[in-house]
Length: 142
Image 1 (cartoon, rainbow, N blue to C red):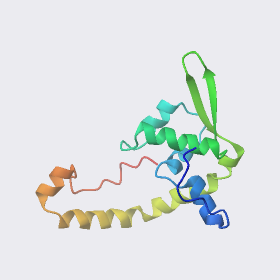
Image 2: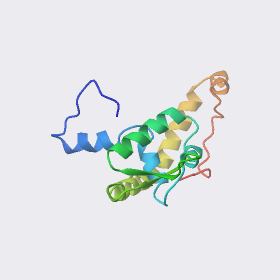
Image 3: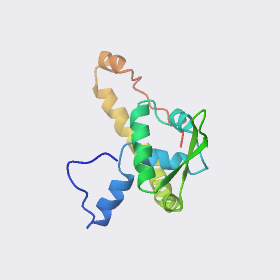
């Protein structure tokens, strides 16, 4: 595991939880494993486009080292592996489901905030950023 410059403070339960689950893609990884094992390439396809393979691999490695995720080698010759949640990982399901539920409830408010922000930007800045200025709540993935 990456040796962090600042040691982990294990005296605080919230800090422990954030050490294990914190990270831009760890909650996504756990969410995508709720329905069962997945190969690394399958996980990568299900992640937002900005998730790099290197970062996903690092976060999978950390989740594995913490015992949240299990890595299983299916075929060592062709390096076929898959990841699944351990019992410890499954204990996080209620937390992940609460985050999803909260996000679904907050979606209309966030869409309004984002819409107002994009209205304030000049049209050419929106085009350069690849933003249409419209949000589409029908394109819900999770």
